Image (cartoon, rainbow, N blue to C red):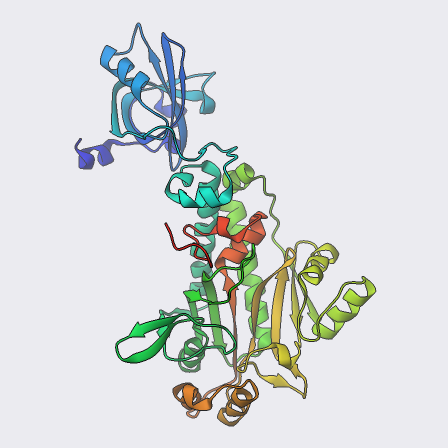
Length: 433
């Protein structure tokens, strides 16, 4: 098979329209469905853009082609040359009458998982065979939507004049404190996989004003929940000459922009997943105001944290709204969040569709205060010497946030488990595939 020639000749299934009726075409894809009626053979071929029926007629189709169509197995990779024809019975209103049919990769049978859109295979087994699970249209739809989130995030940030940065994945000490780290062997030194690009993006914002990143984080917490991962992707943003309210406004706009793009570009994927999306509104509440609201609704709120139940209640009270809970208790925020008075802080969380999607705030840019906050959190300022020194030479007030990509995907699509929003999840039990 001349693959270079094939790629010049092939036509994406989703691009086939009425104007192509009667034309010759080459399509490639995977065999999604087979119906063999003896003298008629119907194969449904699927590529990334859509699916089309290939119709073999014993009395008319080339004998070798008709026989090959009867031997192929589901999910095999195939190439078909043929004539496009209008068909009232075929899905999409078009079919292909084949003149050539070749199997490029035969799928062994039986398949280890159900690859239909109504698969009853449990998620753990689907993840064991993720490479095959990705043949499912619903699985593909999730990652097409996630791709739109990634691309639209970058598009928005470019318009904001923010600079995309690539930060180290290996660090010498904790970025945030309190979070368990994965140790790695780094020559003769002690090192860890990065739990955050927090300290680096602050340094950069203090030099070039606005910075963003799509950053992989590793957290060694021994949890096993439907909303946590040990390796995750994060949308990070940091801005100089800004407080928490400046960057909350940016966050509200970027989430609105990304969701609007998904609605526009992924309407078929949303329909396939049964999801109806709206561009969210924005609401601001202090932590104290939130606590009062929860008390009225008989929902528990911790001294410095919101429970999962209170996050869900905010969604009930303010549907399709990003709720910014700010003026967070100082004890509930990391050392780099700027204090506000004695017990409050310039930190915030963003709650959307019943789940926290973001935390952030104004940062401490005063070296002496930063040393004090590190000590309060039980951390050694010597481990953060370079970080502290970066604020000694003209560091302005600055603020930022981190937004989980998989968490956002899970929330907007109403997925039951965050692992569905990760191509190859890494949690406490899973290192393969």
